[in-house]
Length: 405
Image (cartoon, one colour):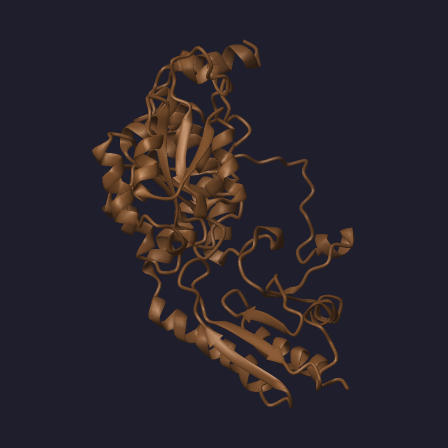
């Protein structure tokens, strides 16, 4: 039996219950162990740095805790059936986040594509095969969203073949609704910029019998956001796994109504006749995501917050004594909700631009990354992904660079 024949046998496997897989320990007596302590990044000449910026994808998100790495290493030594693992993990995660169902995806972006794909096709395999070619299929083809919620990541919906329809008011939204409308989408990080808030958005969806979705990719903390929007009634919710939850950077969660999640699963590997085949998530990532979430929900989040405040205070106290420097600590209301230090200076007293300070820190020893979007006379830092003691290094280096005359 060739690979194609094997895949055909998995096409219509039930998504709940799966196929019981036998677990086999894997050992290769001929394999040479990798030397402990090997620094592959150093061998490759790849720069590593202290992250005083935050959980940005370009900076590879956050760092996994030891218990996540251990779970991944354990998962890597055994075989399981991918669908069965997603079934079992999905059941556990759904209970944690108050949703009917859940699945581990290859990030929040893929969750958006898969969630919409599930809505478009349901469990009709022939329709699944047709995406992203919607013309003549009878499938719906439009996603309505608020103009103020425009973001590059909305491109995830275009992958299904759908069009994006921007609106600003309730009247515009209701005028835009047609037989083509598949989804009403909401972007949490830009919520305050829109004219329609969360609850009203969900209510409009229910009124017109159209599913609603929300992107909360970087919107934990607070931890309550993991279930808040499911409880609110959004039909599906997506979040990144490799940020505050500290799961694998290449993982995320799609959670919501059972019918949507089950249909979305048909668009995912191991099936290969769909638009989601390239959005593969392996057993190690699934297990790592599950364990990371499990532990994240058990955190003492108040204690963690105080630790962040303590670290940011170390940096603040070091730099605010510099003549001409002004500091403020604030917490963004939406997205990356952590203590953030804003450092600005009098250009008459400090000759460097924010970009120059950023580059001095980046190419110094040790290399330090601060938050993107520097100002002409200002920079920003966070402390929530700093390793213990790194806040002292960041404080010293920023003070050194700002003190140069």
